Image 1 (cartoon, rainbow, N blue to C red):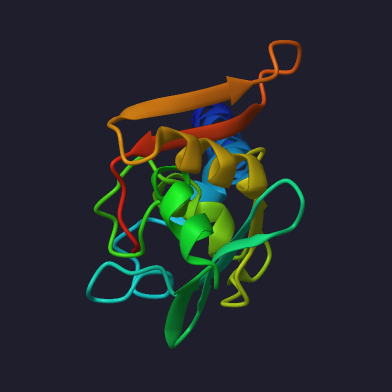
Image 2 (cartoon, rainbow, N blue to C red):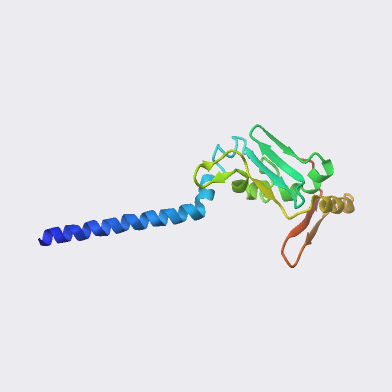
Length: 168
């Protein structure tokens, strides 16, 4: 009888350990699943050249700053907007590691916790205003420097320009 009691107790401990492990995994999946699924080496979201496959980056007013759609990557049609927002948006090859295309790659990839990577691409709306960035870039008039305008009450960055810049 003592042998059955010990085995039952051991089985109960194993069952609790398995249940705890499943709960731990579920909590981690809910909190970190997007990061796991959108790892930058994943060929579903990044090409062999390191370019993002899908996603859209907009300014606060909905102006298109960058868009990747499976086979092609595009920036804004306006040369001044492309140049003035380059450092905030980043570039598709990832040379500007602090740009939105690199930092928000997991949001741009289109992650769904049930189905995984959707391939449809997500949209990231930045707090910068492309029109104000253009004005600030023109005000620098070819000089080296930077302009930052932020709303101190909300912490939003409204303008973030660095010069010299280039057309991506």
